[in-house]
Length: 466
Picture 1 (tube, helix red, strand yellow):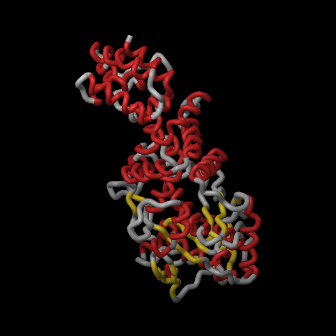
Picture 2 (cartoon, rainbow, N blue to C red; picture 1 turned 45 degrees about the vertical axis):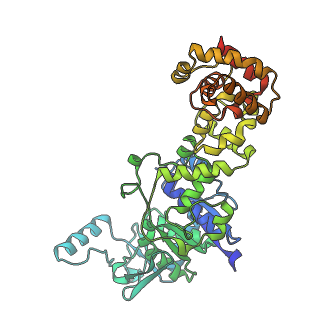
Picture 3 (cartoon, rainbow, N blue to C red; picture 1 turned 30 degrees about the vertical axis):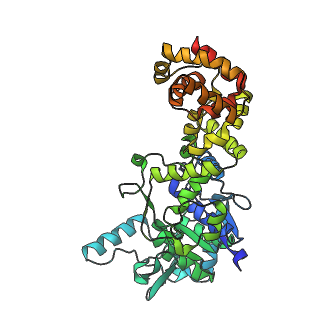
């Protein structure tokens, strides 16, 4: 049944939520949500030296910003170590694993000899079939008994069937000599216990699948559906790294990209649905499937991201957009809007959002409503306010004082005034933009006047004309 589908995202808390990790989380979220299944979150914090609470918090914040909600509590892999060890001991009791007493020095010597003899350096433990009566009273690891002949086939929904010869698999250590489980064991036990049906993850884990399948098979557990997705590359075709710019999901929030645009863009990185570029969350959930994921690495393109973000800003509900804008200001460490600014922004939002690709662009367009008198002029605006321009504004004022404050009437008044002076509306627009916004590039003069209202508009014009 589709509703029985369970996916998971399992990051290591050693830093921020990487943009590649964010896409992996998104693919898992879309696959589960589109089929009425569950999307689970597990923090793989077994590496105690590198895992930090701050990194865990950053991952959760990044997912929350992206709107990727998870089902149930966040699972800590470290907390489940006793359960992982229990499985290793169960396999030992069944004779599917064994105690290995070989020291690091002995393993190194074995590899040196094998290398010198031109043989495989894959470690073959002398303890695999040793009689327990010969076991010394010494530290040991627990190794799984890998199959020694035949092949392991990883049936992957993205990569196709991947065949690995079993004589290339070593007897993997499951439990270290101090009794702590290794990551490879922990992942399998957690995925099984959490009921994960589909493992969608980066293709850098593809080789791990063959080793993890040994544990599934030995325990008689169902192997999940594998889907190993290609990594994300930079525009130059190399693996995405710091030199390509921001890497953390939250950095994109602080740069002013809307979450819906980010989701849309990340979904299109390595997955496609026909020629569709722009789509809603609901469409993405309905359309997303594993067959649409390509095998070659996707290239991160900021221009495409901005383009999609602009389209999402344009169609987002005004109130929701304002809420996200305020979250952006907090994330970027910028001052919050005052109640007056928020109210003005609400009135201006319908036209501000039409051509803004990011929140900084939207704020730049909203400068006229966020500013208070005296209006600060940029260089171009100051140049536009020549003595002639000030004269025009002075003469225009009485016409505006008698205007009904609606678009049609304002257009009639300004158009009539320009015609009476034998000039174009363009000659009026420059000085008006400077007076109302202190900028040479602004939203429509009419939009600004309607948002500011007659009193504030006339006060700004009077100030500029003085």
